[in-house]
Length: 333
Image (cartoon, rainbow, N blue to C red):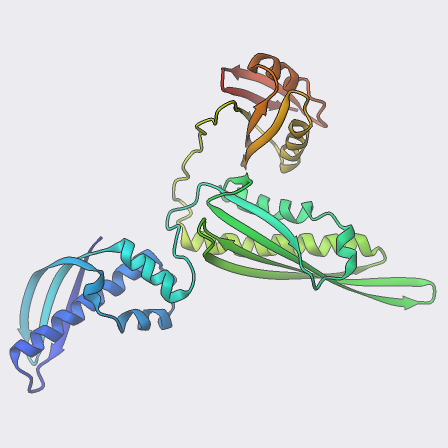
């Protein structure tokens, strides 16, 4: 990483050699600060100060002097530094206690939803699929791919629920406070960012308002997370298309023109129980597209026929193409 920077130091009775050395050190320090800002635009001042307290030459592969001059009582020196961006990036992660990777927009995100142990017992009777859906839809809307089981970024969503009851005669009104805390980690298990949100509601049906507040908190947390991701990875950054190198004995089944996350869920459930499939190894869902890497029980031609006849609610499948390791369908409503 090439960085241009300038260092200035007043003479104030010091020798020319001493002033030049300090000005050069200031220029190198400025170069490292600039490079750190390019690596992570959201660095806080505390972390920058920690970095500035270190020897800047630790992160400089080489440098060349562009210009030196004396202006009134100051010595100015301009340089171009070749900064070791990888070493600096790792150090920023160490200083912050979190990972600065991946700096490039991830190609895939996986989501696990967990119940907070401090929640009221009723949460055990609720399906948290809707919370996962809210998080998925928000990220898919920004172009991120949701995969199973593990993506480049792994989200752990902890869902909490607290409820109270207010009785008025024979009528009960329930109050529910739902919270969702999401931790995003990289492949190495280092924290990228954390967000949390909550939602509140009341009504006569405790189950209904409970799932409503959890969905609401999940949607709000997902939007906040998306905002954090968009700050970290340019929204316009290209997303690398995923094309699997199929593992031995697997077939990729892809679907295009999906209209909703519900259609993906139906396909996932149908393929999981299909008589022509032993199991699903990997899954990807992104805007209007889904792919499954499966272990087949039969040949590609027979499997394609079986899938095309799946009993799905509100839509059907049209076979577009089939080869030895890939079957392609489009969704028809």
